[in-house]
Image (cartoon, rainbow, N blue to C red):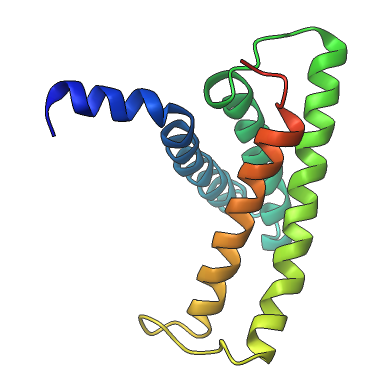
Length: 145
């Protein structure tokens, strides 16, 4: 790919590339905060919930400002977007929670890389990430840019 072709590709797919980058960063925030909470002897279930909250808060800010470029900081806009964002993440979490046993039930219970039911986890994660993208783009930040 030539420089201009790479630049054109980056421009055309900026939003998706940015979403992927900040998604990796969000995962690191979630894992890192979980490790910190556990290090300070907070129960692992509580640590998991707290790290999810940190991850969702980080994802909201980065998705709002850098991915979907919703620049309004008006209180009513931020509250609306924040509520829709958290609600959509809870919704996709419930979808993943329900989908996992359904996929096991229909036979996607094979191990992968030595991990039990890893294919189920991979498919569930792909569905959850896709739903998060669609809901963020078409519901939460639909007015951005």
